[in-house]
Amino acid sequence: MPVALCNAHRIEVALTVVPDMLRSGLAAAQASSNKAVGARNDLVTAATATPIEGLLRGEHEGVVYFISNGGRVKIGHTTNLKSRVSALSLRTDSVLLALPGGPDLERALHARFAAHRHGDTEWFDFASEIFHFASARNAAISGVTPLPSVQAGTGPSAAAIARRETRKARAFRVYADLGQPSQRAFIKVWRERGFGESDQTLRDLYNEMHEAFEKARRGTTD
Image (cartoon, rainbow, N blue to C red; front, side, top):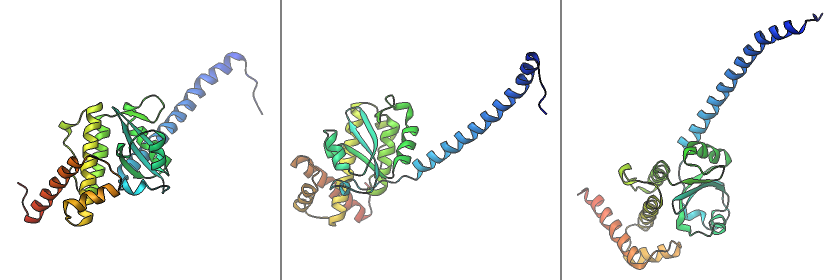
């Protein structure tokens, strides 16, 4: 049967029991939090890039995208990247990276780069950490070596570097897909894929890819 206690004894019992309950609750919460952080890290570590150009034709499976705008980058989720870019009034070459995945991966990436986040928005400072994350994953599917960390910075200059790397990765893919094409064929396919750029930039890209492939064919790196 319940035992009637005076106020003094009630307080004494509470002082003994409640701290133990709180400690147990805190331990459980910390264990749950650590498990969640581990799961988020696993999602981020396992994330692999998918070619951007194939996503710019309409609806597709869910992806998490990185879109740059000046010194900031937006990390969001969509099933229609073309529509999302248009809604942001940006060019398609502003898309730096696309990773197959959904809201769970998006949240994991938001947690990964939380130190650079603008409030509760999907916008982040274009920090060196974010730049190298995107660069390394694009390199894995395009054969382009990521830039060394000493070349990365923050702000608009980092965004410009990332755009150059994205352009270079696309050039590598076009050249490789066509099997060492002529300059005219290279430029024609580039235009068909809607990547933009001036004729002189495309000639420079073609020459760079041609030289790289020739060195690889000869087995030299000089």
